[in-house]
Length: 230
Image 1 (cartoon, rainbow, N blue to C red):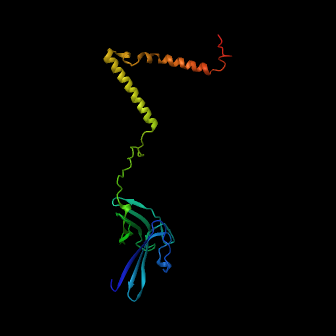
Image 2: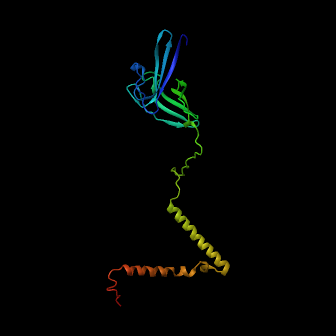
Image 3: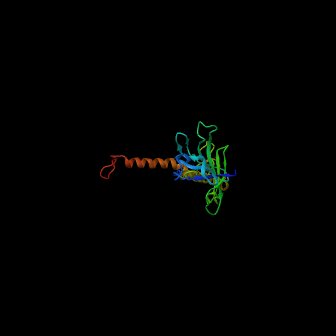
């Protein structure tokens, strides 16, 4: 309020921890590991600026006063990125409220710097708006396949599974069409409905002969000098 005014400044780097700010006392800087820092400065004409609040909003921080893990989260539409930070003010101050950053992404054809929206002291949430191509819906995007009833991801059949499925369909079709043909053309019934009945009847004997031939071929000592003993 006049004759002073408070200016809030947000420093943010989502990729790495913020570096030390030159020309600022150590007590007026966010702790090491901070990625989002809120600094409030009180200004008055003729009087040097005075920093009244330094809040580590988000980051991987481990100091005597502050401890937190970044823990990024994405939610809903529009896209909102939430980053977590330590409680402020640090214990033993009361109330000590966990801090967080909420960035709402808007769709834009060009990239813009994030803009300050508000800081809710009661919730400890700093709100920023960020217009970017990343906030635009992707054309042709599809939903991931739903999980099955057992909670695992639904999987398609393998090539071997499809092969045996098609083979089963072909066999069923062969016997079905053959039986229908024999019934309509010859009035067959019972085993006579079976297509190529003689072949299927002789198949066990054919397999037996093939097996016997293979066994005699690979059995050692079965012949000598090209002659078979009789």
